[in-house]
Amino acid sequence: MPELPEVEAIARALRPKVRGQRIRCVHLFHPIVTRPQSPAQFAALAHGRRIEEVSRHGKYLFLLLDRGLVEMHFRFDGQLFWFSSAKDLLLRANRKPHGVHVDVAFEFSRGVLAFADGRHFGRVHVWESREACVPLLRLGLDAFSREFTAAALYQRLSRSRRPLKEFLLDQSRISGIGNIYSSEALWHARLNPRRRANSLSRAQSAKLHKAIVSVLRRALECCLDPAPDFRDPQWWFQGLEGILCAYQRKGLPCRRCGRAIRRIEQGGRSTYCCLHCQK
Image 1 (cartoon, one colour):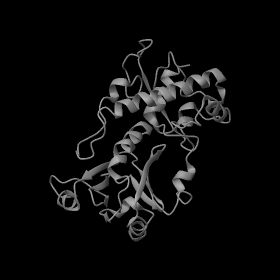
Image 2: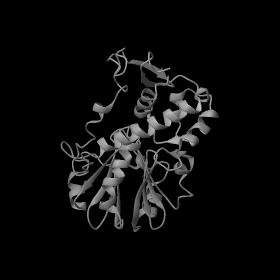
Image 3: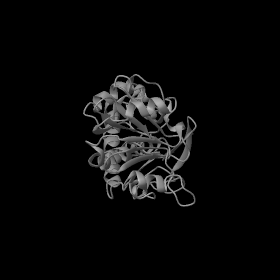
Image 4: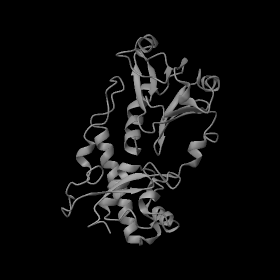
């Protein structure tokens, strides 16, 4: 699942392609992607609108329009593709056996932006305003924002009795951190993912804050080198596995103490950690 670094890289690569362009036509191939919005409502809100900016909050990507905004959530497998023209889109979209799966596409005078998720978990919606965008209103502090300080993290930790890993996954508290980078940040901070959030001292909270920011920034560097290539249907982020110290390293030696990395289950999801040096 794309987390903050991946979505931030997508936003930076997409911005020069679409900023200032007007949506000439909406191509909706699989209406499931816009639910619960109807195809007619979706198209009416997007058609004719000009994209003024591309932004991100947490794991969400936003196309800010001259009136309203487009919200994209990639979930597990969502991706963006770029077609040279509407003709190129219609020749390749959802054509077997070598076509490209596309759920919805926005046609511009210069190119077409397509959203695709073959498993149909990803969602794209259009809202009349930021105030009307329900997912945006539910998001907590963005982990890359200036407001995300050590003090802000400690304040939120001190009010929660949830295990640390589950706290970090709660997008209404801190947005942008998912399963991968929560495991990584806790490993770097030497904190047991099962500890209660409010058990951390100020010093431990500050250490966790530093680890979160460092892990996310290092991951973003990897996501930008090379930058996303929306023209290639096979593109995906490369090199991230080289910086991971805990995630999906079950049975491999901890890079600090040499003990085996463990996989434990929390809230139905996998957590990777070293139970020897994470206290």
